[in-house]
Length: 312
Ligand SMILES: NCc1[nH]cc(CCC(=O)O)c1CC(=O)O
Image (cartoon, rainbow, N blue to C red):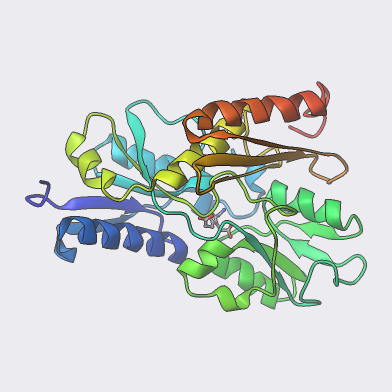
């Protein structure tokens, strides 16, 4: 197949991104009996890695961690781009397509507390560091007395800020901690029913060039069907809400043993003062429709003024 050429894998340079790129390489090696030498991991710096002093919602939101990698793909400097699905916008650049979602890691968020091990036990007025509007909104809904400060940067940077005392706790994805073998830093694992994850959380996404059938064939062997179905629903929910990083949106879909997809979707105001959620299920073939209808349900419940005022 493609064993006569080097397969160039494009990734960000953070420890988590490199772990994800290695996982993609290992899965491709196993699926096609290829040696490690058949691959080259190309590290690409993104605007999201460079702009660290502003919340994601202010610097352009989703796409910030993918743009430069997608450009490398378009310009044929890499063959596959590896992303965290939750960092991806719903619309892809012309000429690119998603060629696989890998089996999903743990979807849950975790709390890493210094002043207390759980959110409930934090002292009144304690400070939580996060750059995610979704995490901010849900944590404020649970504990309106808490203060939220911006925590940008990769996982290591955020943990360092916590150690420096810039906050009493922070929130991270279990998936990232697992991939870096750092799960032990979590002090509370948050149930997805009450603290639903970002759409796509925990799933690695592989993007390739439209028309590059060789790469697509190679990557198809490591795609995971239940993850793909869940992500179709979650991303359709996000698309219906026209979701950018400016809106706190959570979505979690699972496929049960009978092939039934269950989607839990939620939108909130950034201060947590208002929340609308819905649950919808159906056959896996209708994943996209289920996501769209769930999106419409929460939009209607929220009413026309919901996104006004704070969304700029
Ligand atoms: N926003 C950065 C980001 N993108 C994906 C993950 C975690 C890994 C994943 O969801 O697959 C993280 C770090 C975090 O939220 O803790």
